Length: 305
Length: 263
Image (cartoon, rainbow over all chains, first blue to last red; front, side, top):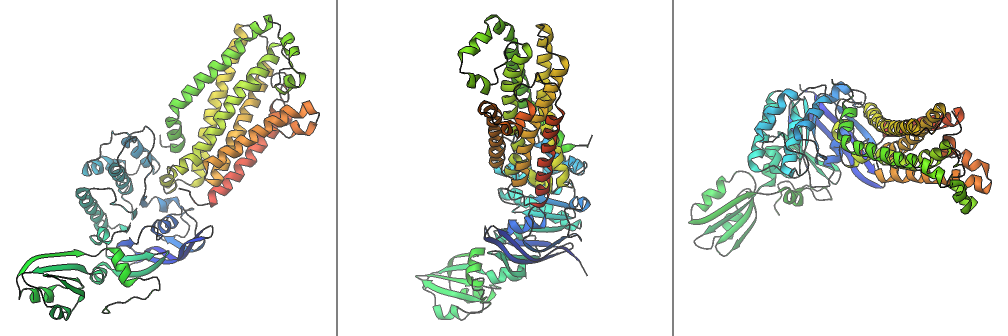
């Protein structure tokens, strides 16, 4: 049985009178890629910074790689790679100098991978920080998080600022690390950013975990927006009766609905008519929240509206 | 080669500003000190008598007849001191709290380095810079002392320089420690600059209004009283400066180890 690499219990964090975390429980198992999803301001970064001992919890406990005292264990910190949500880069030093410095903080570990990783992301090591774009900064962040081949990678919004091509490169890199045995905790405010790599996902909202679920299940629950346009007005009744189809409406020749699960039944019903146009897109996290994670906590799992 | 990475990194990034400060401070000190022979000719004492006595005392200009008196008042007691305090406080506030606010500490604190190490190496970077600047003041004064035959006794000069070093170190460390305790550069600047101004006022005003304790509790009183270059080595004053520095640094250290990182 795999053991927990990150174990968070009842984590509470207050900033003055504001309670940012209201009892977060989280367990990331050895070797898994764990997604950490929630809207901006829900407490993702605060949780991550508590895990990394940058913030001290008001209540609750944090255990990382077998120790609850990260402060007292530099050898454990050496096994962690961290990509901050916003990477600070100032002054006149070059990317190369800065990465060399970060390697030095780790007794030189990772220096041998800098060139290779920079090349993969098309990062020019001789550029100066001043005037570096958001995307380039993010590349530096990714390189420094992965360069020392850590056992645990904690990545706060890793793909923000990266263009789609580099997002793919990032996913490849993350998968390599995963195959190599690393455990990954990846946060995002966009579900689709982590679903390509994550096995399980925790959803945080207003400082509390509202759900921990397999990505596939979550995706099914989130559903898709589907629109189909026919050459004649479709029958609302016929489509409303289909399994997995909700919020069905007809406007002119166009039918729109939310689809959960396989589209098979919908496609078979549609194929009895002439379809002139169709769209299907994954619903975003905000819509999922509206359906399932209302503030009162009532999950309307599978209910028809 | 991999020893003291933070110290070396900070000093590397400070190379240019520190060079400029060193040259500028040396130039200003040299200018002021080399004015002395000219001052002698214009009969400074007469000029001083034309000013209100309280003002002369507050400025520490009451002893202008000797070179030590003049250099002690004008350079060590005013211009060099003021510039060094500006540098020490500004740099002390920036070197930890300033970098923390800018987000530079995040990756250092998640590296295998301990918070203690980061605190110690950043503090060391502050003291190295202060030492370089104080050494420049001493060097310029030594050279002019010899070149213009000012006749300032060497032991007085060394004692005054030690005091200047400790005083700058104290206020720099105060800014550093307040920054380490709060993570706020502005707070660090405000507290240290405020303390320096109050200290200066106490030391300047105390004697003119006849209140002895005012300069006795002021770090500037510990350093110079009325003149840092005519009183020789001050065991009590130096000890007070050093002990206060240590107390302030330990307090900042303890808070820094326990608190949240600011962003």
